[in-house]
Image: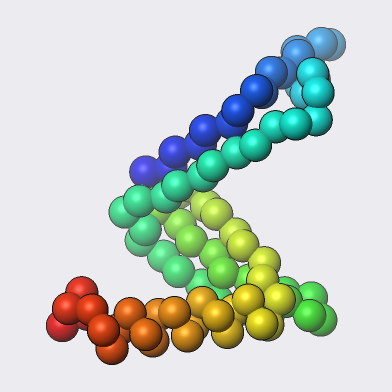
Amino acid sequence: MLSIDIDQFMLELKDGAFKSVGPSNKEATIKMYDVEGVDVREYGDKRVKLAFEDEQGSEIEIALFPEQAKAVASGLELLEEESELFD
């Protein structure tokens, strides 16, 4: 399941094309549940891409710099050591 919440967002449909209208102060929150597929790969010369897909085919891709990817990996290792979640 993919949930998208976009604050202060409005689209204009004109001549078959969508256009974002209003000020550029929009924020978004995206959440994905029931992930079926996960992929980790290089992205360009300087980033790591994490890709997630749910059972309905919705996808989210996140590009991280190596330091950010290491922080995610460290966080998962710490959670694995300290939480009963991985038992």
